[in-house]
Length: 120
Image (cartoon, rainbow, N blue to C red):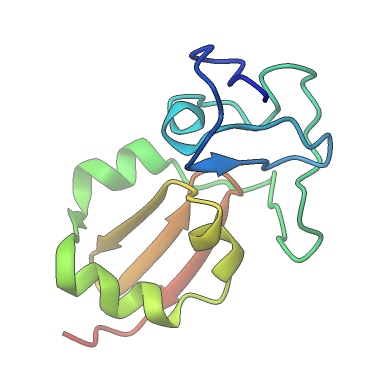
């Protein structure tokens, strides 16, 4: 049995292997990791080739969080159903849903953005 390299507890459930190195962590532990690389080997290539990482995102996410309304709950679920990068949802990436002149979902892990007209 393997242990999570972050909390050192046994990996039994809520396991994620996000990068191509296949190192495994608890999904809650890796959410605390704010870098775009594996905590063990620092590889940046994501495990799933379908995820399109955008390392050139020029949006200041922290500034957006301050000027936009953060959507949660049922309203956020409306937009998550339409979000194209289902792998981000499956892999428990940190997705924020912001509203200001439309709705934006931003994956902080992949640095991808999808915009929507307001549906609620």
